[in-house]
Image 1 (cartoon, rainbow over the protein chains, first blue to last red):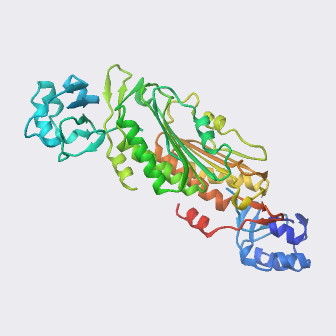
Image 2 (image 1 turned 90 degrees about the vertical axis):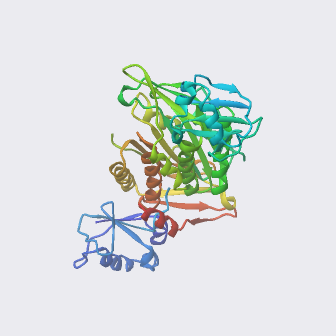
Image 3 (image 1 turned 30 degrees about the vertical axis):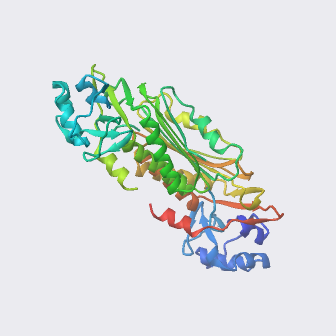
Length: 83
Length: 83
Length: 148
Length: 148
């Protein structure tokens, strides 16, 4: 599955995009965050305060309980500040 | 004093502007309307339904009890419809 | 900056007017604009706008000053045409500039609501079937103006 | 008419965009527009806008479709820039056209409120003293978006 990071989440993980294999038992955004946070100290720093992180699954805004499946495009980013 | 008429008030009186001498005892818009309505059948028609007429004294919106004095510029017109 | 008020028969250049409010400045974060145009409802041929020269400019200036007193605007422009205007042509332009969007957007709506009920213009419609009729003031415009 | 959505690095021509919504038509009585510009607060040098290609266009289209469903609009345009933008430059343009003014003005404000909180853009400020910082989302924007 494709994972994308934006803004300071990208800066902390150190990567804009990575391909991962969805581990068995990881079925929602909350579990995926647990899994990703263990990938590196940068990832851990990015996901340190989970309330400041937003997510999208297949380009739709998601919540911690949104389900994820192999083949999904999942993105993590701070609250948006456009306009 | 200068009296101005606009829109259908002007069409009914048949004049856009007229000079009149303010009669003794006429001290407000309501009394001035009584006076003007007697000038001609056209004036009478213009002031037939007074609730549909608006006034301005010296280019400020006025009410029936707004005072008038010699030398004032007084205008009568329907409710405005600009914009 | 004093409001810019124009009452004219000629069309206006909305883009040039907008540029006046932002050019050379770096404190304007929000520019709101409203253009009112003549529609061809029921085959309307034209709209003829009568106004009260002198009082019109005065009324528009007061309304614009009220907007600048209520919201922190960096600039404000009101242009209103009079005379004969055909469908598709612009009638009125309101522009408001501010550091922030809420002030610009709210004051733009306020200006339109107030000038609809407080500026001495009268519209006469030239009808498709010939003849003409004066547009009547609408209670909804009074209601819109009184919400501010 | 489908909303016109553009996400681009280049500046936009607000006048040309406005003309697209009214040219050759006689059913548009109201054209509202909002331009958001980069301010030089505290000597800010530039604003760098990052976005999520693909999702951005999708999110803007949904927001614009929501506006067209809620108000009787004849047309609606949203243009949002990304990349490096210096003070005085426009960042975002929203245009709404309708027969009547309330629909155009309200939907324009709605579009700005929603895209502030529902479109995937992130602003980084290049500071006067060197360095840069990410702009934080504001609770007031959330409140503004939730009033609709």
